Image 1 (cartoon, rainbow, N blue to C red):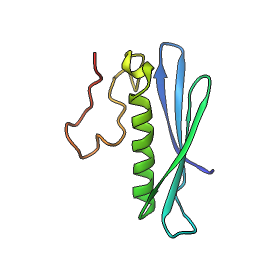
Image 2 (cartoon, one colour):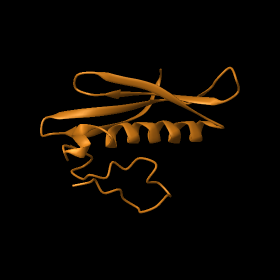
Image 3 (cartoon, rainbow, N blue to C red):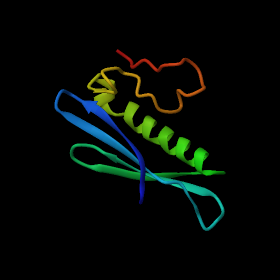
Amino acid sequence: MVIFVERRFELDDDMSIIARFGKPKKAVGGEFQCHYVLGWPVHQERGYACGEDGIQALMLAMKKVHIALIESDAYKQGRLKLWGQADLDLPPTWGAGPLYYVAPR
């Protein structure tokens, strides 16, 4: 996977989680795929999303990472943040519903 973009999230005071997204590429079936790696302190999650074009594949991969992060115990406990805030600034918050997603308290 060729890293296209990445984002570092804060976990507690001294750790981080890094989401890395590969450059979307056309697959054998004609769809575009965007692979990602979500690097937690003790393990990695890998996956990909498919789309009609590279932008859709990238956005859907970011949405999958967003869902994985907000469903984590660390996020639900308020320990996972981006730039000191609970909003992780990833889809599906782009263009759907409120501008920012507020974590449950």
